Length: 365
Image (cartoon, rainbow, N blue to C red; front, side, top):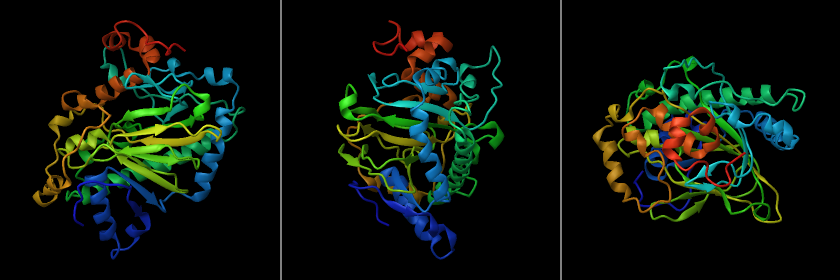
């Protein structure tokens, strides 16, 4: 497939194409195009049962409808792992408050951090969950969903390698054994525009790591991605699909061949109803310095980057630290900037480094 200079929509890939030797090459060709030229794609017919999608989505309004004191008992500031509940407007992107309410969770992991270890090794640990009596079945169902997403994310790492002309295990060096990895997720509620201070559901940003798998859990538009010329392109919801996007980590280790794409979410229109979504963020090993692990893709694949065209000005600037710091430290810095109230409690030195004048206005819980 010939590379394009720009894009005006997001390509759709059918997971079923992977099921036969005759159609698999078409999927890989389409995936290569999405990786190099767009950075985003829809995945239809993923290997997640429709019933599980429906069950997870049905829980979201119930979790957010909990009494405020029950939600506050799970506040993220309790957790050095940045897992838990965030009130509307507490998280920040590019210095501005995001108009969303959310719970951050993660795949199961017991922290082994000890005093004297690098701070970034403290970032992974157990989630804070609502009480079973408050939302019966939610934790079990959501963990089942996370297990399915974790499996799919690892399968896609092999597909990335194939699409970039690498051996099947070409990206294995970026992951520890599965039991030593933790991947993050969140459930998010975006109130309507007439109920919030601005249209910034979440401000322009890149994702970290390698891949993000987003379930748009209601039929509201709002997700937008920025193309090569800086235009914002809508990514409307589609039932039973994932939106997959490339993180800055994967862009770094492919020398910019796979591209991370700037994106944002706008608040739902006034007079409608809240927008819900569930992003799943695939992490990479915490001790890696990505500038020491640059992939050597075949020349015929690398030349596709030059055919793409130059990237214009984007509104996202985060994760530039991948050039010099361990990936875990990069993730921790991002968390500190996004949740200064949590950083003030658990990472005071980093907090003072990035917020020398104290908590920004509006972030105190």
